[in-house]
Length: 258
Ligand SMILES: [Zn+2]
Image (cartoon, rainbow, N blue to C red; front, side, top):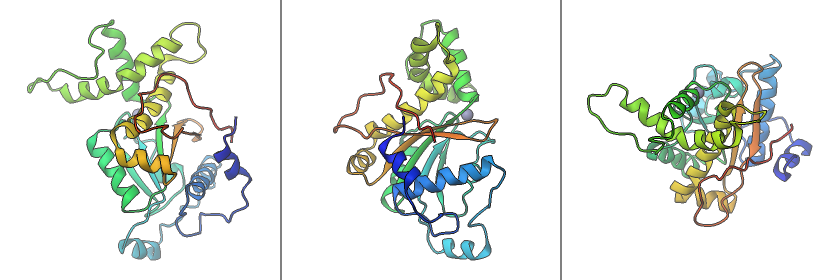
């Protein structure tokens, strides 16, 4: 089902943004991402905004149109897969595309001070971090499924363990939904659930982003990137409905069939 937001993009008669200044509305930013990804998939990437003149202009100030929160995986550099250039995207990357205080502060800075109007949380197919979280969750056999990892100053894997624990709620949700008689694997379900949880964590932990999402000053999108085809499947995230947002309960948002 195509949402109102996406339908407006698909049928809007607007100028092509690739050679235009950075888009200043959520709609125009979304269109730029979709069109750039289509060029990338078709092997028709233009590599816009990478010339010396753009470099000179953005050196004096940045106005990225979109905040991208995505995995650190080397195969999905946002500027490449969305065919964007210098100054177009404000990118926050960490394995498993989760957000903590520092990531949220980065997002808030880009939204408040740089004028970014779109926030895309992008997971990806065969994500190693989510896969490791699935394995660790299964091996824990119902024990220690909390999000807080034990602290041990001499444990060389303590940081990784903390990251996997942060993904456990998405794995638990996917395990419940997809472990039996489901066409969707637990891993694929966890990848999508993890994207939705990162969006809702942003609403829950950032009063600024929650307010901006409520007023429409920023629009959140979720997405999953296909490593094989290069296609980024994007969907519109529901805005927070009130001042307090419960963590995702398991109903996936409608996907865009663009
Ligand atoms: Zn990943």
